[in-house]
Length: 180
Image (tube, rainbow, N blue to C red):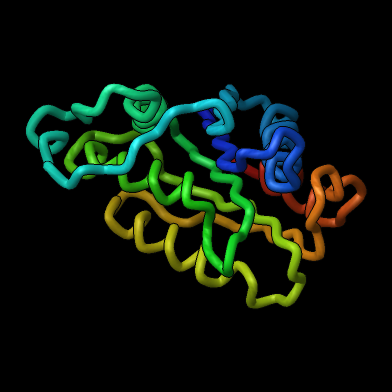
């Protein structure tokens, strides 16, 4: 059975290494026959959450920018894959801001059950993505029907486009292809 998969690239770089992971994941998922939608935060306007909690009453955020439309896509997806560069051993600020703005999902009848994290960083030590994984895990824990289904890390990448040929691309592809 085909799943509705949303791949969100959070880097602001045009040819980012985390976006390369997102594309590999998406290609794998498409090869398995899943319905794909890609969203890039690169040209999106996403303001910080105001903490007003109006979203919990209205079921949507009251801030008029690009976040509510993305959050609606998150709500309807069976699977969400986030791709983020690692900055100072944590997910990108854009990704964290989007997660905060997705507060309206908390009390909703969201569809997603699987969440994936694809990360890249200049550092290549194994522990580099741990805080980003922990941050996303905390968000996922707020959604009892969902789980963090997998992560891929590509280390040793600094400049745009360096991911070409990196072994993590195959891991991301295989992870996407393995969704059942």
